[in-house]
Length: 400
Image (cartoon, rainbow, N blue to C red; front, side, top):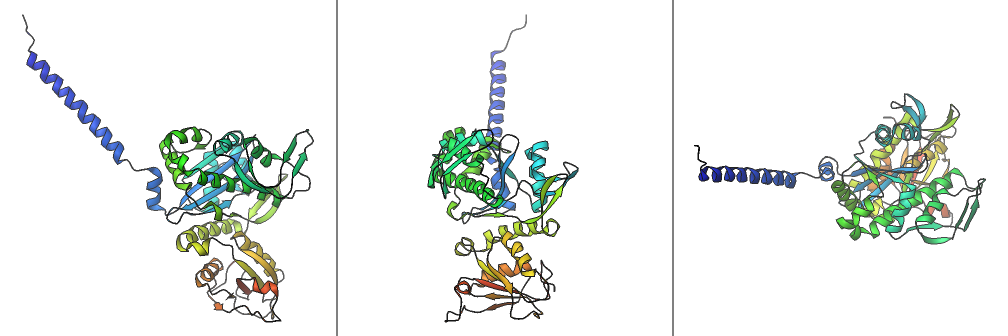
């Protein structure tokens, strides 16, 4: 008869116990050494780029690429209009970027926008208007400025009532603010209104930074947003971007030419789409290279046409507005025979003057203080830089 050896059983148990401990330690060590996706991204790209989309009832309300530099807590927003047109490979045709979202979903949408801007956008935050209303209440409201009281009604009988001034809107009111329709509101006003919401969103994240850092509190908040990150990584992303200096965020909207394609009015970014890539690159580089004082203000330009080319200053205005500059005036220079384009630096800021010059490939920069004598105009004293376009300017760049 076979007799079991108790020592043999003990040995087997010890071996099994050691094996379990080794597995546990290995798994624990692997988890502890796992690098955050967000942190790993920062090793190869000094800025965090996140696509933020707001949708409601099979339409895109707004799309922005948020670019954030954690070192300085500075950020920028590039607004991609839903009627932006191109040949989209995911659709196999010319159409609006909104059609990509509606037909192919957020992943294809992000991929096509990456092609538009010429850079990778690793992360996205997808907001649904109904859930955004719930999120608004959880974050204590969204603060926006409404210049005059809103009392609007559409053909279906829907009515929207909103107060004027700087107001904190609750979840229901923020949905009304995004949805109301007025016959006297133009496209620019509608874009500005919707961009006010994304500014309010980042301001709310910033105000609630401590709540967001708390994992338990964030678990409820995160259910109102969709992302391409798991729960832990999404918490890491939002914890970082909630530190943004939201007071100095200013959305930039890419301009272009409008054309009707298959009954749709589409906006095609200037210069065969190269402008949007140049603007995106300039904004990213500026966040890293410029100090806070230089980034956190909008610079005012005067553009003068020093050639015989009709409309050159006016067309250049649209170009530079896309890059985030304010254009005070355009007009003709004192001569139409300028051989070389020149940038006149009125404020003595060589760093910003160079950044402006880099955007149009102009290295001919001179410093000149604005004269404040009796003959100078009020407008002139408000100009930071004057650009006099010469014969070497082809409408986009200064030719070498």
